[in-house]
Length: 110
Image (tube, rainbow, N blue to C red; front, top):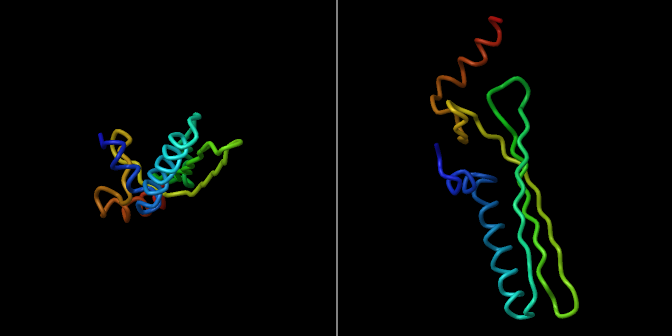
């Protein structure tokens, strides 16, 4: 099984992890400046792509950072396709590149 950090770093070619880091830093700074609570939420939605062994992962980072008189809310959602391997292992590419070609042939033989 892969570590969550490895998977998060692959989403949106690493951009998603950068967005989460920026949201956490901005929120933490605002919390210390204004003395009020902030919030960072990460949401992942998985949907199968056609009849393949792939899923589309919609990844959202939403954060509320306090201001002097209220809060600022931002939300960003993007999507990344991932291959699902043995035991649900998520990867950007099939673990065995030959599998990518065999899946197409197997589908035609059914």
